Length: 453
Image 1 (cartoon, rainbow, N blue to C red):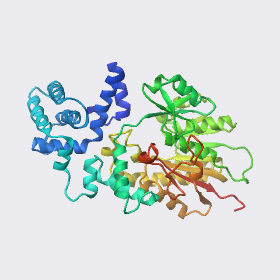
Image 2: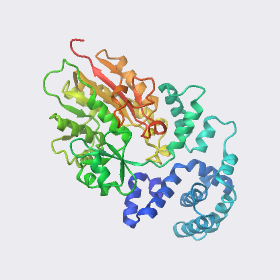
Image 3: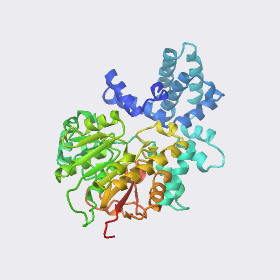
Image 4: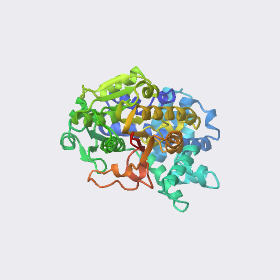
């Protein structure tokens, strides 16, 4: 909790702590729920703490506040007996804050333990309902709830009569711990191998996916070798869709594929494996040396891939019409992956959109310029926010007459080969945690017009 407050990422920090502490099995699962659950429900817990302490949380020492949040999650969000939660949390306060803090923590938690979660919700929920009430109950900032509402309405999956239930379902699932999905990189591993060598079941969502039922994905032999990886099923489907859409018949000569923003390398792993099967060169580009090295490690089982460091915004100018298939997995707010990154909802601000928007547009323009006429471009974000998805694509295409939008929905098929359900009105694809069980991935498919067109 303190490391996250200082800028660490929970999904990276906690595995290191578990390994260092030699915690496994039920102890590791308990610790993960304690840490991640506390981070997810922070705003609700802070409202409870403020009422129980009779003071704003800003007046409480940061370390003591983190200890209180951990205690409240045990009382209101876990099946820990009250006496155990109080005893252990008070002891923690004395160990990491001060001896004197134990009495304060004990008093606050005893007051919290006098009522259950639903009672506390009634006490602290803002009057008038609407977005503020939903935001507090499900511990999401108001602006994110508003963004989800707008994206769901725009997709055609909800209307005025169903939007409240739809948003509530999404927010609820956003607070559920996600299962770990594995990908069998085509030509390097198979789903059967993953199922046979790990505690995993075949994915019903992705034809190259498996869902880990328990254990460390890093212990799976194919993952250790780089032939498979931990990867969200939605991310797998995006890569498969881009690889499947045909390029225009006017394209002649050898193909070459590009991942413009490849780090950390998950989608590159799928695309590069397919490209290798087809004998097609593949380039993975990253803007920083550190992230490029992460890509090299991720793609270690594909030594023929060219991993380079470069600014994706300039590739279109430096290598015009050089690639037949280009992926732009643009930097974004990550609002579609809040299940996996619980602290992101509190870190991200609406002002981030103003910084990311120009970058996203520049990357998409560069990708189009780098694509041969008749070739295809995939624009992806792990965010459903309209300012990062539809608005970006429409803005870029307003100023170009050499690009057309392709309906992406037919290229999204589940593990049985059937078209994926609940993809909305199109032509873009927006995946949803509560509808598809994946991260909230957005995908737009574009084709650069051929010279004949």
